[in-house]
Length: 530
Image: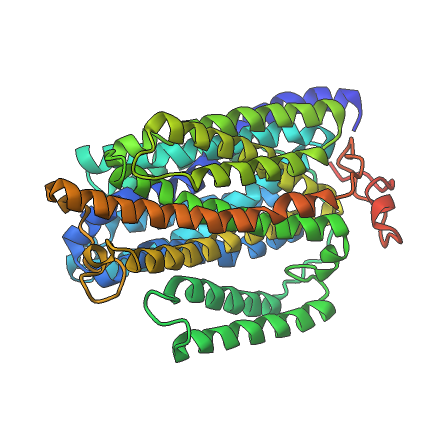
């Protein structure tokens, strides 16, 4: 790309980035906002035994669709595919807001309708997350990409904290339906900005969809998500249902691998994993999602129960985490753009993240809010080093024509890791709590974690009993962070083996059929069509 072309494109990048940031904010905010509205939804519709599916349906739709959206963008052009995902997300949001209303026949089937519409919303959200990363990859060369991806990481950090705050305000002052309707004006602005200002380079490819591969991958992912959702909760880990889903997942993914080897345009090109950097960063992304999303779910629980914070205040107490992640993401992005070097950041980030998780194992009933905030700053700093650096390495490891597939795979592994983490850490927490002296207060004496839990009654307990219960809670939560430490220890070790391949200074695809992965990153090729 010539200097003249860069001068013309730069203002457009800034304008487009505003639309992309809104889209990413929508995808990240939605689940956080809805979680605070769930008690009101259950109060209106009932269906307490199915309410977790309001979250699971969204996660399932997002995870299943992510690699497919990425590949569709490679085949048909990212602009049209991304705008389609925005439209699907907004339609799903509108339908969720209308679930159980007179439009669909009243509240009788409201919970079922909401779960179905959340799946639709999740399908669109999968395209939002992978599309943002891939579009930045199209607009900005890898050498300059760190700055912009650092901004996106900052948006993700803000969304993690703003979600509960916004959700609490909407639920308290408006209606739970506005947790979905709020997406419509914001999404409309993003759609208008992107449709009118986004101009992406185009590459010629053969348009052939690998429908069989897409179906097998979807079946395998669905089975995995259901295992992590139901295992230890709805069904025992050794139950026929869980074992059957495990067999289905293995069978579908093995056949998927065989199909992808012969597909002309595979949904997830297995050749990408022959690249050492891409394979390593995929595993790191899985572990990052596993530890980060799994363990972080317990911070609000600790703050609201042991530290006695309200739901809204627990969101404010996460600000130190957001601050550490936001500042470091921006600084690392600028440093990568300035120096072109990145290998040290995932190593440092992994080590700092291990330290942050280790500090969080010290949480107990006597830990003050200032002390826990300092621990969260350390964790946020580690995440800031890792979040977008991992995406940058994944994108720099592949040809431009596979950028969407690579972005989709990186997002996919992080999502799958998060799904596993949430489920397994939840089971670890429940088992630890059930075995504690306070376990009876949270199992109703029946051994099933969560059945008898009523956090509102904690304040009414006598001081000695309350201290016992809170001690059991704090011990179970700190136990979860010990397991998170074991997971995150592998991150800096794996990152040590990443090879620093020079970041490309232009979005030109490497030469076709490279003989060496490292040389392929800098080989000359035909310039993209205007």
